[in-house]
Length: 326
Image (cartoon, rainbow, N blue to C red; front, side, top):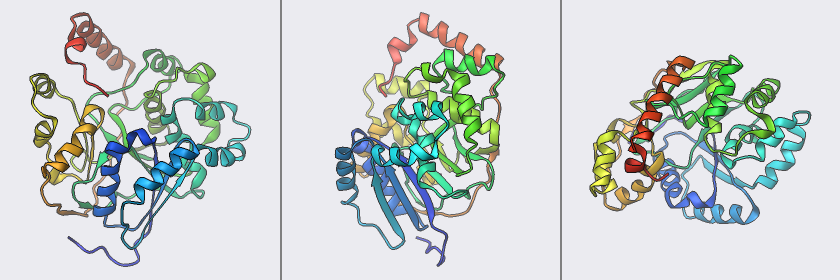
């Protein structure tokens, strides 16, 4: 393992999660603490006081190394800060009360200093190698890249297009890096444009907001060779359907080249099995930085063409046959 240089900046990391994610999230945190080559400060944000205690107990089983710190806050703790931070922005305040995933956008800024970096992690990640995070942009946003788009619900996406709001293609929100300079007036307007208080309480609304934010502030995608998002390709769906174990399907992933793997969907449940089976090679050091790739806009024409293909597949019964659990 490469020894990191002394006096490195402390990376500021955030994760919004429920204790229900702990069966796989504990592997995200164990691999983060074991393999990150930089000092970091991890802020975990959950729901109520009981959830806070449960998550603290789970993290208490991990022995941090020098320079690694963590803490857990409840939504109630965040509410106290949000009352003043978002004063005068009623739609943002209402947005915080929607799907818990939406608080990945609103709550890290409550605990960060102005202009300070925020590295926001999903709980369904795995860090297979010793690694360093990429540089957080001075201005703009860094997101993971995925081949398809997962923008939904459809009426919310169309509300953005009807208002001529540009959306980024390929946006995956397993990892997001940016600085605490969010334009609150812009976010308030965006939420109102997408539906305001009538927004459906659906998880994926979060991705629409990130996609709009990406096009608003600029930045780019993290290198997908290093920050890899699971893609449930057709052959993987067939393999799962005929009974191939998930840990075996994961063997096709190039973990040796990754800093981070985002096991979205069903893949997050396979990581614990693969770890238990000793399926990961010994970690190697990947500390060199990689450049961001510019965001690509998702045109309304491309989005609607994709929707038509999905509609055909739905009518043919494809999703009934190959639907994967979340």
